Image 1 (cartoon, rainbow, N blue to C red):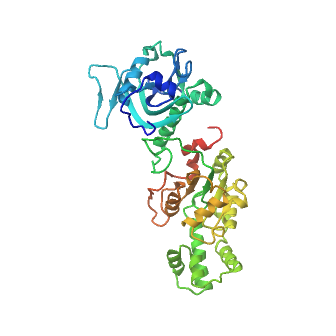
Image 2: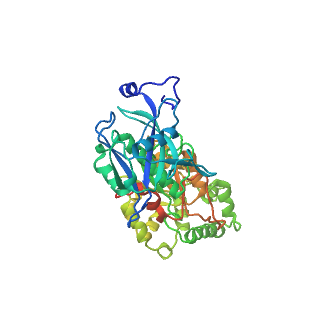
Image 3: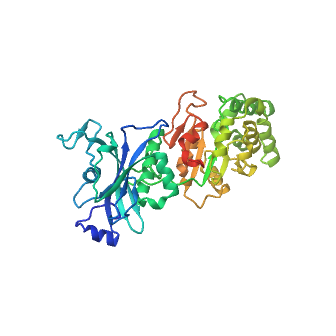
Length: 440
């Protein structure tokens, strides 16, 4: 049924097709491993061209052949039976403990692995599919097609398949295309060690879904868009310390105590009446503690510039910083990327009513400024180097990515269970998120 629960009684296949009833089906990606890659490093799949006699999608290309699961039949039994009947490929299932064939008398069998379950429905099909991968290591000449079901087998590279999918989607089975997109997402997630966080798309192996395209991308500025071993951050901290000790006569390290107690030194200074709560005094403080020789600290980053040039321009980009707008603007100019972020697209501490960045109010304001409050929070993609900010991003439902794996205070490797991904630097953006780039 619609919850993937087997019904008490089965139905005829013809009735299922006529009434477009929910059913189970298998989808098998067949990787050709005889020569796993060509000189360009391409991987190849074996794609079926269905015969003109098929009741569903005749004469269409199927990147994930399989079949309708019979009443009382398991997903695995169906996947192995279908791939053997249609292509003559014998398979065996590998477990964590050992690799074994389901029939020890069978030789020359090929590894089959189950990846996930997903649902698919359109005006012709409503099914729950189990997706498998077969690593076929034999030559193409040993494939034995079932002529009633399969017209031919095509050995296509992944780049060829992706190109054909975009240019001629009508030539493919729609459910097969959906299965392939899920498979490619899963493969990439596994490759880059993306966490499957509960509550997010693409994270439930029992109900796999495609991850939605972000409606907005938020970048932190300091120690995220650049990394200078915290020289800039340390100089800002030193400026705040000097301001508190020299201008207000506060004890050494009291600025840090204010930060720990109130979330920011500025909030502490206001709360304890060391600064009058008026825009002029606050602006003067912020300008003085951010008065740094940025262009001697930061240099242009051609690699980052190229990344931002190739990033899909249809996705709005914002700087979301705990600092102030004029400091972020100077950093962006020094890095040579200021043309990618207008002043209006910089969300700073003043935009957030002087609140600490890692509070829900700041994140809510960021969504309001980016005009994405009407969308699910998951539509926000967020890059930051602070685990506290990542934790709040997760709490808000944003897709949050930790940039940098060394903590500023501890100078040791850090990790965060609330991030979907940990990147060494922002330069890994295209490798980890190829779907965000216009020619990928």
